[in-house]
Image 1 (cartoon, rainbow, N blue to C red):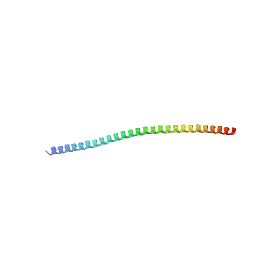
Image 2 (cartoon, rainbow, N blue to C red):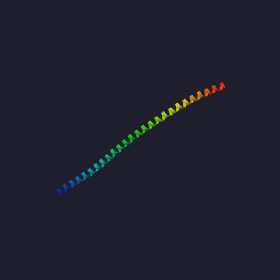
Image 3 (cartoon, rainbow, N blue to C red):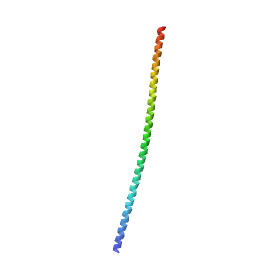
Image 4 (cartoon, rainbow, N blue to C red):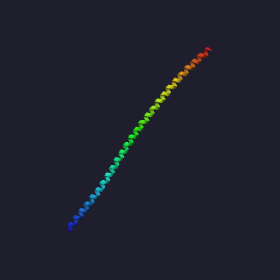
Length: 95
């Protein structure tokens, strides 16, 4: 009877240890799943930031192109005004 009781205690102890181990492993599994989800979210955020940076660069290039076109237009206006001034001086000298 004593041997049976000790065997039963050993089995119950083993079952308890197995249950605690299973519970701990489930906690580890949940933690790993959370890490995977967090990594996926970080990856998605990184991709979105890369797209946003690309769009900012595209906008900056457009602004740069517009600035260059404005500078060219101002140079043409300056040249035209210089020619107009020259014609005005020539006209004034003939009068």
